Image 1 (spheres, rainbow, N blue to C red):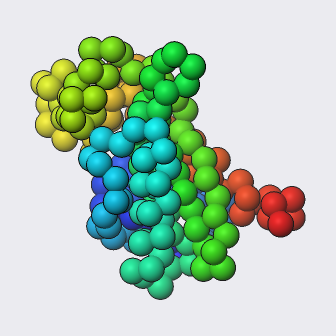
Image 2 (cartoon, one colour):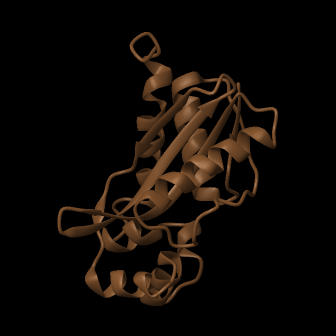
Image 3 (tube, rainbow, N blue to C red):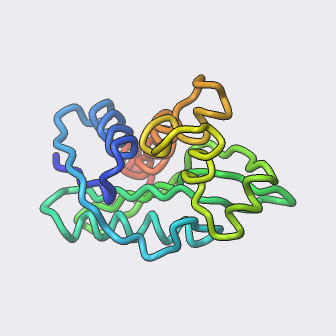
Length: 172
């Protein structure tokens, strides 16, 4: 089975690899750089659109059986804002599965910077005093003091997006 991820971020690629290998065993995972079609810091429906675009382009640009898109972003639920990863998986037949990682509340001091146009990864780099945290532990790694990594978070979303493919007899 061939899987193409619409990102070259090693955290996203490794999350996809680990989940697909656990579910399907014999898997070849590649990555392609694609344009998500949304702002660098997506909000609300832009997060969904970005993941779906990444999955479609990953499939279109390769000979893979599945295209996977993961888009990190911010969504409002009730009166609070949350960070999450939205995942879309599309197969050659056009079947799509979607899911999300766990959601965690976005602190107001960070939310304001995101609304001003900064990307979460850059804000977290500044807070952590490190570079490229989005290619490593991510915001969740910083907030949980290393107990949960960005890869762990994304794996949850990939599993959720695979549900229609795993339980295909129910999701006809």
